[in-house]
Image (cartoon, rainbow, N blue to C red; front, side, top):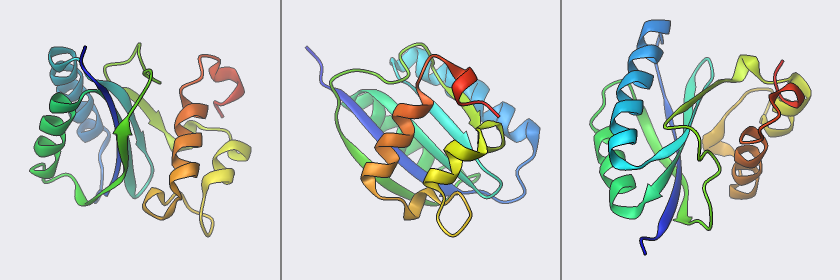
Length: 142
C-alpha cells in the first residue's frame, strides 16, 4: 500500500490576473488527475497557499514542477508529512479565494490583518485546511 502524503506550501505572486488563475487550475487539474493528487489552491491578493495530497513520489514531482513555475515567487514548504486520509478527496484542485471566505473565519488565521500563510504556525495551517475542507460551504463562504 502506498503512503498518503500531505504537503502545504505558500508562495507569492505578482499582478495575478483571473486568466492566470484559470490556467493554473486547468493545468493542475489535468496533472493531478493523472498523478492521483488531490488538494486545494487558496488565493489571496498577494499569495498562494496550496495543499497537495497523494502518493509521496507524485507529490514530490508536483512540487518540482512548481519550483520551476515563474508564477510562483518565494515558495516555502509550510508542512509536509504522512496523512491518514485526504481532506480534499473529491477535488483534483479546489480553488478557494480568500475573498470568498467569511470574514469571521478568515480573521482567525490572519496575521497583522492580512492572510500571510508563510507566517502561520503549523497548527493554524492544519486547522485552516480542515475548516476549508468541510462539505458545508454555507458555514464558510462569504
